[in-house]
Length: 214
Image (cartoon, rainbow, N blue to C red; front, top):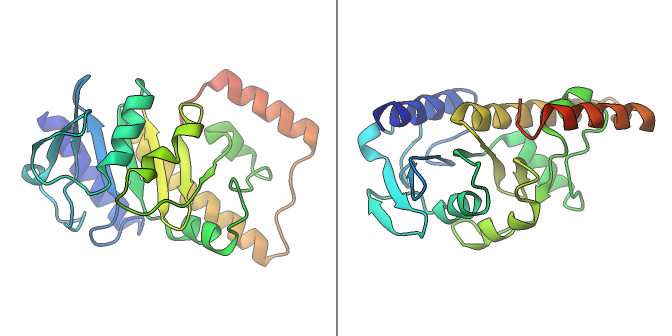
């Protein structure tokens, strides 16, 4: 567990340094075994947490150790719905959140102009708004699972689950970069999508790559 705990701390510090986490925002977890996860604590700046402050939670929701994130139910919903999920990263990427605030009608990030996004992540849904800290945060994700791994949480943040903490963390970085590119394109007159045949060809390549976020 020591190595897994150290990895969580490293990811927290990295995301904080990239302005993807601020103060006590966000939460990160990793599956320890078939029944237990290790998760960041509630109310502590992610750049300052220690391995001793990480909490253990049973997949049933029982707190085994520590004072886990108030949003742990969202993590548990993913682990229970996706046996292949080994890690979950929830952060607050500013530009990604802004898309859901400014354009609440969107159901997904409009990334059909960026071939790398289709290849690396596929469609990036915008999950409906759910009040922070409630079970609804996990419930709104269920219709998208396990087909999707990377999301914008409407008016709240970004979330990525993966088969490793690296995959989940990389997904959050990619989400914010894509959101920034699309914002810049909007300011320059709007993103222009690829033609339909090219989109279909790239989606076919994505199918060959598989579901991982790369």
